[in-house]
Length: 259
Image 1 (spheres, rainbow, N blue to C red):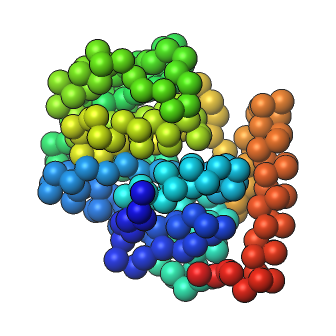
Image 2: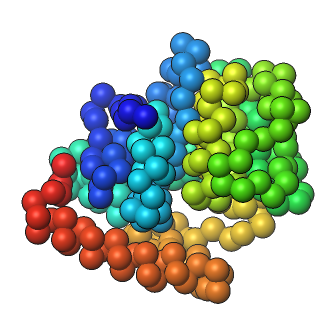
């Protein structure tokens, strides 16, 4: 797998993961260009958690780096990108990317397929999105069973997605399972764009609360999410965040950051 930078401004190497130098306008324009030109890519929405999962798996790191776009979802990735010289970079937050592409789809005519979520989540998500964006075109929905990471969907489901005529397939399985999914299914699906968007399904369906805007802007969303679900998330946010800072420090000492 080879790295493909979505923006002409390039990317920033953060512990071996090349985060695309993007803001929301660049990200949306690039995705719409892929659809217009019938290019086939997948998008990984990257956070500190993504970076740390990639430290534990060189195969996952290669999979993420092979994405057509690796968005700076977490504020630390935005700050590090700006520090490395990409001053135009802004947060490309997965839930906001979904809203912006759905908003534009009424004019652009793009069709959306939603794959993932727990029981009833995807249906509620679509109901809310179509209320907010009446002109958006929903190609279909599917709530999968319990697939293992790397497991390929049934031919029936692949055919269902392909027959829908979707331009964008939104995948909400949680990281890193969703990143494996979009990479492994890229060659099997006709839709130009597959986006591994994670918590956007839960946030926009109302099943999980979002952090206040001021916490998101100041890099404190992790703290809000930790207070909502400490038993599940404490390892991710306490241990991984600490390890991320330590690894960055060692990387800087060895002269390997910024890059």
